[in-house]
Amino acid sequence: RMLEYLKSHNWCISRCDVPMIAKKLKLNHNVQLFKYYYTKLVVWMPHLQFGHMPCCINCKDNNKVGVHGYPSHPGRMVVDLKENYFIMGCRYKCNLCKKDKERLNAIAKAAAAAAVAATAAADVEVEVTKVNLQYTFIGWDSRVLPLFPDGIGKEFPAFLTKRVTPMHHEAKKAYFAALRDAFFVWNKEKLEELMEHMKEDGLSQEEIDSKMLFSPTLFTDCVDRYIPPPSLLYFRVRAVFALFGNMVDSKSKKPLFNKRAFASANNLLEEIRRGYYSDPPGVQWYTKRLKKDGTVAVNKYGMALLDCSRGTNRVESFHKDLVSGWGSWPMGMEMSAKLLAEKRHRHNHRVSEKRRDGFPKIGHYDTWEVDELQLLVYRNRGFLLFPHWSNSSEYVSTPESFDVVALQSEDVQKALEARCEIIAPLPKPTRELQYQCKAMGSPLPFLPFTTAEERMQFSAYLHNLSCPVAKVDDKKAAIDWCAFVDGQKIMPKLPCHIRTYIRKWERNQRSKDLFERSKSGREKLAELNSIELPSAAACNQPIPLPPAMPQPKPAAMHNQPYTIVANSLIGQIPVSQVSNRKRGRGKDKEGTIRQPKPRRCLTCVAQEGPHFETCIGRWPRSTCQYYSA
Image (cartoon, rainbow, N blue to C red; front, side):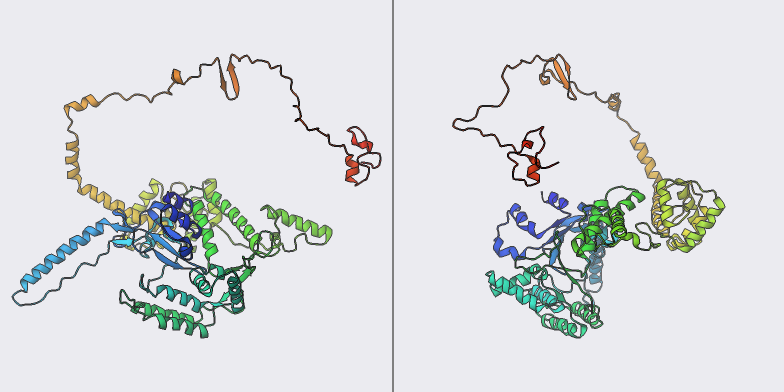
């Protein structure tokens, strides 16, 4: 059930669903006590989400990688602009590297034992060191994410930084809260106003401070903040590092900062000093949040809600929607471009309705019709029908291209154009390839290696090179490849196509060499497999045809003289008895007299005349005697 919930919610558990999840897991806890600790959880298990097991950090292969287990700590904390949340996942294990570590440890122990025996007479101590080969890793390790195919590693929802503080240090929560308060300065007037409302609502100062520490969303939604200039921000952040850096945990006896943490802190202070984190002057980061009717949204205390434009959270959420919509659907290039353009247009229109003041709610996405209506009303009436509307048809067209862009270099383009002049006339490609050529501005489409002629020609090209395969320049190879293009069986290639296929070609060459080296062993296996038992001939029975559709059994048939197929009755029509019951209105209840509704002249009613109950226009075929229709 939990896996079904994660699949339907994009592998994310929202804060509002935490009580429901805890109830299903039968976790006994006080909701009122723990509600301030509820936070969003993001699950990262690529072997379930994308069907790809992560590669090992040592051998860079995933053939022997499996799930090792789940870590005991709650997960990796992500510091966001508005709230903090956690990313959870499982650890993976490479069985191949595990065997290599065990083998190397055995060799190291044997070498140490031999060294001890050789130096026993000289009374020399020998130190035995263990092999430091890591074979277990977490799914979001920074060394693992770039190894995923098809850009899966880029779908990781956070930007990882090196952990410079201990995971379970008792001063960690207070440190992050102090660092957040050092970076952001609250608007004092609005903050005091919000606190006064919360006190009037019955909350004590201690409860307000707890909300501000563990659930700051209520404060960030209605109180604006700013990042001070470097002259002030530098000393605020430095004071936090000086206060919490050397705090020692009472259990582990370790400080909050180690040497690497202090080095990272110094780098951060240097960037603060250069002004990389302070708000630029004159830039407004906040706008009032609007409701569907265009009015300003307020919270339960009557304070206006705010939208902050810092960060890229909204953009990343749109990218996540694109991944879920296009992640596993096979679709052509032209169809994808059209759908992306339509989705981009609708998204911008919805965001404009939500976040632009005075933007009209037209109820559809055909904005070109609104442009035409806007211009028509202005020419005939002299005023704008929608004053806050901008006509996109009035903008100057630019040579920009979207969705599909040219990836080839100028040298590859020139080499291809020169080759096309030699092999002209060019064959007419399919519609999909015509769209690619038009979008990339090339006479022929750039395609990966697919045909047998391309693979044979590339193999001959590599054999004729004087340098080893590992040192092949993919950019130069893409230019040289244009000399073999014929427009039918051999198509031009990009450097990425060359670079990708070289790895595949090397792997195939190693497989061929292994196939030749194992010739004697394969011949013995074929001789062994040719031996048949005497009883094997009895198993060679003829293979029958697939079974036909089974006919219904007598007990499953209704045994009626007719059959209804597609709402049509076939067979003998059953005789129906005619009912002599007189149809009509039933009797009134006893003690009640039904009074008919008095007739009225509808024309008099429409004109608000006083004689609507006496006018002869009350009757169906009569005309009003006071007003004309």
